[in-house]
Image (cartoon, rainbow, N blue to C red; front, side):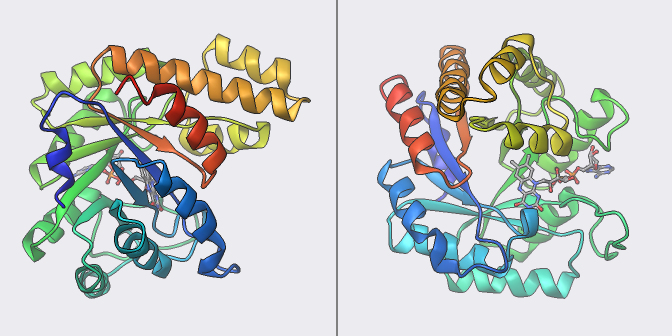
Length: 285
Ligand code: FAD
């Protein structure tokens, strides 16, 4: 299924993100969580690629399982900065063999001390390569609070437009905790002639380590309301989990009321959290 068809009517698309297990764990270790997440019936599930030290090879297998065994549409992420064109071609062949039709085309993070391969500099190069390869629907990542490598928001939007022009028909955003940053970003996109659907990335923060790790990795700003919750409940795991879920639900309600195209839930492979949020907003989308 072409995921772009999901955005044709007025409904808000609710999608999930999952990640493959660490290289040291068997692929089967995530199947239980996947089955529970699929039972929540999201519009699609995206599967990360090599992020946080997970095995890239498993992305295809997990996306295929989601689609064929659990009957939910899948998007496979693919990064390019550490791959040659031949290596990317091989992955695309593997995706095709497994009937994966949708790809989130990414540059990937530049890791200090690891020399990037030279074939792809940006996600837009990968999007163009996939488009020329043929047979896939392409999505791209975007950053409401500006990608950390960009000089400013103008440069970031100009580059984002290149990615859309290179074939990205859908954008999925980095996580954020202040909806106004997303609304301002969406406005900048429309002014720049970026007219594809933009899904808002929502990360329910359910423990304090998670927030510190995420913010240092992606630089999301923390509204005072959010920080107060984290500080107040940091020593009470259950209260923090419930408050994190409530905060994410509050963000989602506001986004839906503002007519966002979709909400992409960073589930962290946690079916309990995904279920609580899905139940809370299920009737609104
Ligand atoms: P790009 O779009 O290439 O942007 C990176 C920087 O280059 C930006 O500053 C941009 O302004 C600039 N730029 C872009 N195009 C051009 C151009 N044509 N000319 C000049 N400058 C340009 N990482 C993983 O390793 N695996 C994953 O599965 C994964 N999934 C993700 C999913 C989402 C929704 C998001 C938001 C991020 C994900 N990431 C993942 C992290 C991502 O790889 C990093 O944020 C990475 O640093 C940038 O990737 P990108 O595709 O956005 O890069």
